[in-house]
Length: 220
Image 1 (tube, rainbow, N blue to C red):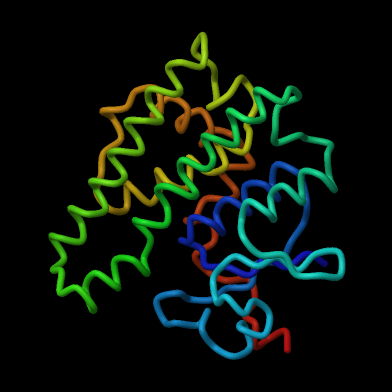
Image 2 (image 1 turned 45 degrees about the vertical axis):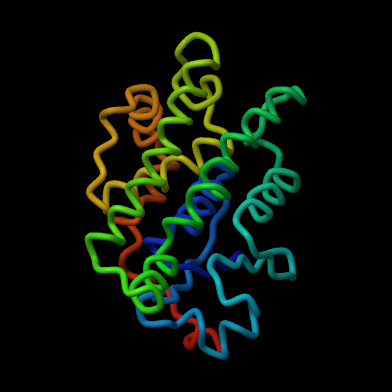
């Protein structure tokens, strides 16, 4: 059995759900409510000492960090590849992924907002301005990179979903929750609209995972 430990609104968990769906792998979702600090409780810390989501129980072990999880899935279950076939194209897709997962997600994440409020005295408007600033910078860079990738394609790189789309769609979901419209970035908007029409992305959407399938307590 594959068990995905995460939180339905977590961007990193959302990425892994998309990858699992694209690979047509059955899994059980195990919910850890980040708003209640459940990812910091002892049962989960025994599974993932970093106390972050997601964690994936698979093939007799536990994997952490969304990119490591997704690339493991791509190597072990290669039937539907998530990276292109050439080194240059793989490098481009990984760069798009990292622009989101490494350079954007971590400065706009829930725990950063909490730190700004509790440790820096920021009010809600200041936190929102911080989030909008970094999201907008990243989306502008992505817009230019998508435009430079050649003729308009259905997805971030070509006409099949890749690692780049797996990162982009959850980040746009997070941006919309923060009331940032993405219409100023037409290439980005087009790619996201196309991805959200795909069954794997539809099934992974947080709206379809708001009620957890199981809890960690039920499994111990």
